[in-house]
Image (cartoon, rainbow, N blue to C red):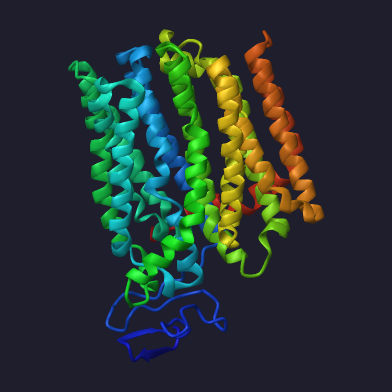
Length: 526
């Protein structure tokens, strides 16, 4: 039990080493536990994020996410077949605009709040203080989604934009709980509820389709409705978060204001990322037919799933990076370099799977009308390792207080992206858009990884990552442009990736997968 003292400004007992007069945790005491106020019966919680806990969280999240993915795929299959590929172009356009506005739901707030909870609890605002900010961002995002949809698809898509795009407001409420669940390594609970919501949405969409409902009704009942229910559930989950015990009493608005100031560079970077990842939607709506647009946005749904997977891995790593940053320079740290290679390898293997199973995914999920979307899935495959890598690198920069640098990197990426779209996409259409998207991510990631070249382990990690990305690029192009067997191409590429990154993958299995396996059979409070 930590020794306690009385703060004259706040009569409730607070832990020694944390207080308004210092504004930070004492350097004399490591972040290992926190005591709740003396008038509370809540026990002391050991809140240090651990590799064991991170591994358990990732495994649980991946399991829940896989379950949610199956439900989401089922929903997509119903919508594509029910609406037809041309009408799905409008639906898919709204989904991509939701992705474009995702930064408004969480403009880097969660990452910085996690760091503050771990490193400086006195500066972390409470969830209640953050909620109005998140809701405000969500409302603005919803209005922009509707406006952009009308501009791209006409006024006839207004109801669909409102019904489908409206989910972004309750989503903001859901994510308000994320930082505290991340610190507690209980984020898998949120993912589990999301999986249940996806299943409920699937059932409701199927029922609406059988009843002959319109697209806006499908959107409202199958997507926005379950998200509203999820936002209510997460309010209750947040109340049970052990990390709430770390809250330091005091005025909240100064903390919120300082958080918004600190997060502004990262928010700017996220805006730029959203723009260069989704800017294609404006260009292909200008140059392509509804059928091609429908096939392209269908293919991009698999990229969206990759981004979710990357966020899960990065989210689990963030608390660990925050702890590691106390004793190591992350960009020059051997363990960080191993993590970078291992995560990129997982992404590269996923990219090879996209190459291998593109045709199967298209036929099973999209049906005959979606035929041709496999071509775009294969062209987009290089995004898999790049997205996994970029999430981890972004969190490294945030953890080390270098978010402004990442803003510059993303500004460079957006400039490259827009120029390339104007020059090539307006001339060559969706095929050019696919390549421009992963080339942009390669530029941003390539610039961000440059500091790793300062040490031997960083240089080896960089060379390994680039080699794996190159393998996926070649595999995707061969599968899309030649008559070579996609099964053979993907399997050979995957084997090469495993061979290149074998040491880092073995390290990941030893340090994360095996502890996670042990954690699954251990009784836990979560």
